[in-house]
Image (tube, rainbow, N blue to C red; front, side, top):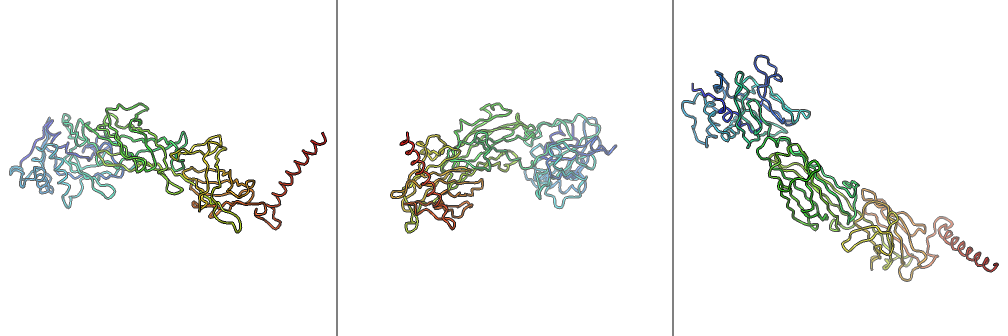
Length: 523
C-alpha cells in the first residue's frame, strides 16, 4: 500500500488550501475537550449554516516534521473518481502505485486542484456517515471562531448546508499532535490569506450581506416613509459595512449600487461624499460612475477594487437629490431610492427609502339653475401663515408676500383647480377673485387637511359654500360655489341661520357706520 508523506510546507498546499470555506474542530483524543484543544477551527462562522465533516483519510506514522496519509476504505472509489476530475479530467489518472491509497496521490495536488477535488468529492452519492456531530451555528455565534466535533485527526471533506441549499464544500486537515511546524502558504483566491498554521480556516459561503442602511432627510427631518414637496432637496446617506472577513483576502472587491427613481434629480457624481469614520476616503480607492436622469431614474455605482484595509468598517456615502415634477402621477406621486452591496459573496438585499407627495382638487360652480362649472375664479393657498409659491420647474416654496404667491385659476369648461406635488399638512385656500358676474364680497376661504397616508379632508367654510365629495379619502374632491347675491347663500337649519348670520353682520356693520357718522355730526 503506497503512503504519501506530507512534509512541512508541502502539507500546507496539498491538504489545507483547497478549503474553500469549511472545516471542523475537535478535542485532542487524549482529553476529548474540543473547546480546549480543537483539532480544527472555523473562523467567521455563518449563522444557520451546518458544517458536516467526513473523514476520507487518516494521518499515521507522525514524525518530527511529516505525517503519512492513508485513504479510508469506504472512500477509496470516490476519492479516485474525484482525483481524476481534478487532474484535468483524466480518466484513471491515479497511478497504479496509488490505487489502494488515492488520497496519497491527491496530496501532491496544488491549491487549484484541491478546490476542484473538493467539489467533485462532495458529489459522492450517497455520502458515507458523517465522522462527527458537525456544527449548526446559531445567530448569537455568527462571525465567531468555533469548534466542530470531528472523529480525530485526519483529512476531511466538510459540507455546508443552509436554508435548504448546499454551499461550496472544502477539504481541510486537522492539527496533528506532535507536529507544530506545519505552515500554510497563503491561498488568497479562497480567502485563506491570513492563516499561518493548520487546524483553522475561514468560512466561506457567506450569508447574504446585510443590506446597507439608508436615510432620507429634509434638513434634520426624517422623510423616509413620510411626505415631501416637489422642489425639496433631500439629503441621502448609504451606510455599507465591509465584512470583517475581507481582511482574509489578498483582494476584496466591494461595490455599492444606488438607484434613484424617476422624480429625483440626483447630484452630480463630483458632489458625492464617500467617508469612513467621518473622514473622506482617498479617491484613488474607488471609482464613481453615474447614468440616467430625473425623467427616468438615476443609477450611481461606487466601486472599490479592494477594501481589505477597510475590513469591519462602515463606508458612508452621502449626496442630495431634488424632488421634481417627474415624480407626479396625476395629483399624487412618490420617489424612492435603493442601494445594494456586491462582493465575492454575491449581492445583498436593498436598503430603501421612499417618500410620498400629495395634492388636492376642487371644482368651482355656480348656484341653483346656474350650477355649472365656473372659469376664472382665482385662489391663493397658505401653509403655516405663508403663501405657496412655485417656480417654472414646478418647485414649491413658502413666501411671506402674497404678491409672490402662486395664483390658481379655475379652468375653462371644467372649473377645476388642482394643487399637487405638496407634502402632508393643513392648507388654507383663499379666493382672491370671484368669476365675472359673481359677488366679490362672498369669496370663499376654507381649509384642507392631507394626512401622511394621503387622505384629504375638506373643512366647511363659514358661508357653507364648500361641499366635500368622498371626504376623507385619498381621491377626495369638493365643489366650491360662487353666488351672485346674498339670497343665493345656503339656508341651514329650520331658520336659515347662515343667511341670518350674514344679514346680522351686514346690519351690524351698517350700525357701526351710522354710529360713527352720528358722532361726527355731534362733534
